[in-house]
Image (cartoon, rainbow, N blue to C red; front, side, top):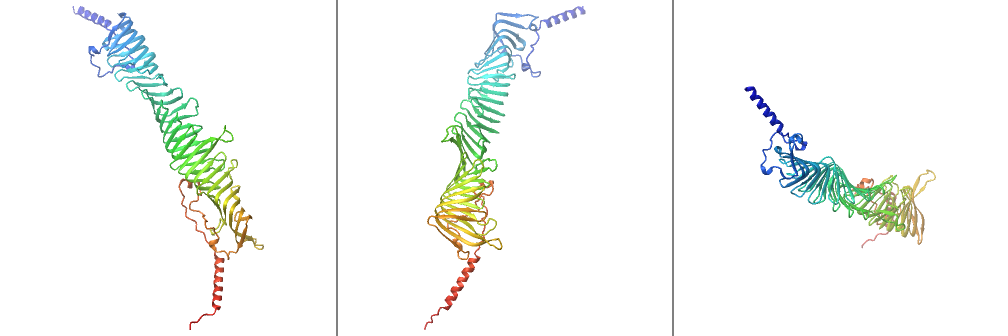
Length: 581
């Protein structure tokens, strides 16, 4: 009897086990947690069958679970799933859909695929094979496998896919689409293309509502028409509609063969306007010149740029670079007046302009440099030094030889004044001077060699002659000249007047006969405090060097004056004295 009862129970259990369907084999994304199993769902939370041509259950098929075929429609929480065939795992509130699957969500988004899995308890699903998600505003996502969560209203893929919003197409290895905010977190070789530009980077967030892309990694935005014009940044924001870029880390703007860098940058690809703050550099390899400063602006279509906040520019030459500084520096290009197919480059330095070259240094209120032709204009109180020589005037023009990179000549227009230290190795207060209305100065190598002065030309020259016995140079005196035109040669320790024409007067006075006050012109302005002696001196308004104190050599004149006074005293003593009666 006991044996019979045991067999009956065993047979009943075995029969029940065979009739009970097996649980679903789920995608890992849909695996139910081991702990904290969800409670039995309410009837209204269960997946509901709306229509099916046939409802079947076959122990040999789908592990004995019920399946629907033919124009199947099921509903859950307002969303409708249609497919050719659907397997329902009732105890798990779980379905698998096969063939022409389509999920219409309550927010208006639609997912189509070859097959789907959906968990009614967690409201999570997986779509496979030619998956297409279309959001209510027309953005289309295509991928092979799509994971979606109806509660958080987001979709995710990691097998590569495309996103098309009608204006641009996005390619990414993986993406998470937040349908409520319409933002997409993209990672892994991301590429966003529209008709004009291509954005490529490893990690960006794209907002479909605002068409704004947040950049979170090394990213390049390239102009399709001119690939050399592009943007690079490692953190920033890009507005795809207005083509505006806000760049915040290790950023570069490449345009017209130039490169702008800075700590924080802005660039409008439509207008071509850009600006940068912080450690700003504008590099122009074709012109072999770069500009640095604290704030800069570029105008791509005008091919011009501006730099402020302690700016300086470096014109790189093979042998001897030129350095410029001022309160504001502007660079620009414009067509050559003789050949419209060519452009000339210009650099302008406004307010407190300074420049340095090994053989010439200068200051002026403003500087204008024609880089193509090698012509430097100095406006308003210009002063130029070359060796131990100084040139000033109302305006100075310096002409550089673009092949040798040296100064060929200077033109000084208005109140031209050239000063040369007689002996650069001593501190004697002796300076050769020549002045007039206009002056042309010619260079030989790196040194001033010759000068021609026109209009009210005057000169003060210390004259030496060689002692035939000692072969040493001895001071003869000082020559004062005045004429319409003066031609002068500058030598190592001498200024030689080689011509003095048109109303010429010239007299040489012994050192004992010319008083010290007449050894310099009234407007003598030798400047050692502000002189630029190294290129770093241009970085400040003035290096403010200690003024060099020169020693006056008045011994012969003082002795002569003393002798004259003694003679006057003797003559005075010989005169009879009046005696009051």
